[in-house]
Amino acid sequence: MQQQLEHLASVRGNFPISPVYRERLMVEYLGTTTMTVTKKQTSMRAQMAGKVLEIAQAHPSLNIRVGTVGSTRVTGRTTIQPDYVKGLLSAKVVVLCQPNGWEGHYRFFEAMAAGALVMTDPSIHLPSGYVDGVNVVVYSISDLEQKLLYYIEHDEKRIEVASKGWELAMTKHRSWNRMEDFILNGCNDSQVHSEKKSQQRPKGGKVIFHVGPHKTGSTAIQSSLKQGSLVADNYVSLESRGGVLVDIPLFNTLTQCLNGKCPVEIQHQLQKARNNSLNIVLSSEQFDSNRPVEQIGRTWYMMLESLFHDFESIHVVVVYRRFFEWILSYYAQRRRCGWNKWSSSSLGRGPRGVNTNFVTFLASIGARGFYVFDKYFVSTYEKFSGHFNTTLINIHAERGDAVENFFCHPVLDAPSACLARREQSVEEVHASFYQVLLIDEIVIAAYDESLIDASITRSEARDFFLSTVGGSTQDLPMVCPPEEEIQALLQLSMQAEQKYFPSFYDTPQGKETLMQKFETMLSNRNFCSLDSTAMLADSRWKNALLELNRSARERRK
Picture 1 (cartoon, one colour):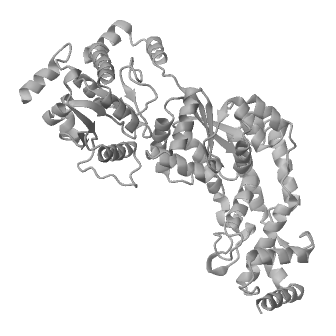
Picture 2 (picture 1 turned 90 degrees about the vertical axis):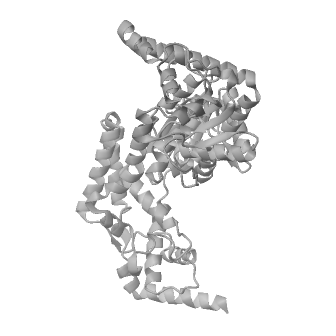
Picture 3 (picture 1 turned 135 degrees about the vertical axis):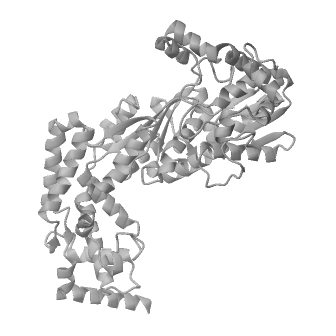
């Protein structure tokens, strides 16, 4: 048997096996000795194998094989494996999946040479001459079952595609074909590019994937998307019964789709976009770099390529916001995580009950304060830009409106949405935002000092302080960051903008406006916190808190 297989492997010309006589369906999954698929496995191969196991359970009449065939690693790569070759030769369909770390592998042409119908996951470029639906079948996790059953039930179509794939492999992709191309054509790049261009499949429009990060105007962008602002520009969003999917609901839905359990309504929407060449816009900051690396690195890249492989292109959009604005908004968001609770916010109360305000928070990140910004913005950009066409959008361009800069950026090509947004007024951040933030800091400090009764809610305490100060905190004692931290905050902000938007930085709207805005926030004491020690030592505040607690006790009676 070994000699016969070696002889077959060395034969020049057509492989003497006809695809008409394939008897079984085989799914090859190399690289593991046992086939246990769990929800924790996130590699594309694990997703594919898990999906095929589901198909096998749903259709017991099919003879499906999932597992290792022959030896793996060095032995499997350096010697002929009879069981592996016999498995390929006896299969009607071979479903392949590329490794996570790169594209292309031996199994593609080994399966083609065996004469089976080859189904493969998407790649940036299929091997020269291969076209989806003509001589190979490209699947995604969401449509694998549908395509698999179709070709099993339609013998003539399966044999037609398999025969064309086999013929191309045996006439254009043997080792001597490569040598002939190299010697006779000098590896003509223009010819290669021409072949790749000619094999492009019919596709839907482009996919715009806005990934935030957090605190860069994502909520405003998503609100506009929910209102259908891009519909006139040939865009659609994924929807559920609750409306347009954004942020966490979108993240969860895409995760379902990438795991092969895409809701039927989402599948229909994707198919409609394909059939009508519509663009799709997605927005979820849950994909920023705060997520584990394996979720936004190669694995997510391959999964997204799989889900949208029959669209024109995928463009990832990352929005930039100046560091000194972003860090304050980030801090406020962290406080709001427990806005109506006393102890749920990670920044609401410090270790051992020590109050954490913006000044102490800024001091805690010290000279390496940029690490938080790097974690959300820089890492998000760099990870996605390694796999997709990634665009940085500057929130401070034009009128400084995140939605306008998003809609008007050339990557979206959305003139109707851009014009409509430019006709709207831009809302400034209200001073009350900073005031409420300051009041919440003093509320937490008073609670930590046991000066507020536990029956009083955090929001009730805030309302009490706001009414007591009469709507202004300007006359209250404040504590501000030291000069060196203020300068570090400014320098880090300038360095980031100069790095990512050098041309913009050199304009008056860049560096000059940045410094003006920073000075304005500095003079308004936006980077400062209320001096809780001085305030809570004041008899006037103590008496006011006693009255607050007395009122709470009266209400309980």
